[in-house]
Length: 74
Image (cartoon, rainbow, N blue to C red; front, top):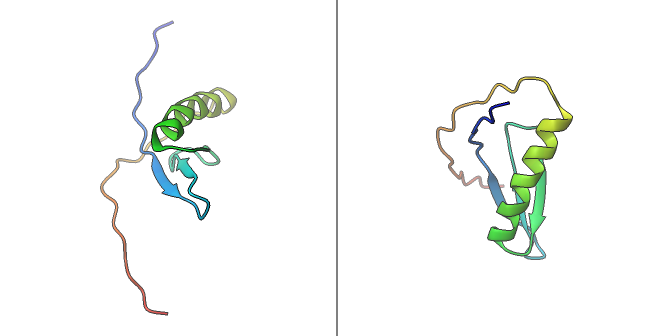
């Protein structure tokens, strides 16, 4: 069986303890963490494989357009 190469957008945030959290918006519930960005990225690749194997339904990926921050006064 031929393996497909797929690209996923990964969102990386740093929590209050300094841990990097990596999330894949296209795959609900697919996230992991690491002490460094590199470790989080290595782990998210594994998490993506596990999530895709567990959910055999076809994913409909959205095209990544951009990321922006917005400031809101509260």
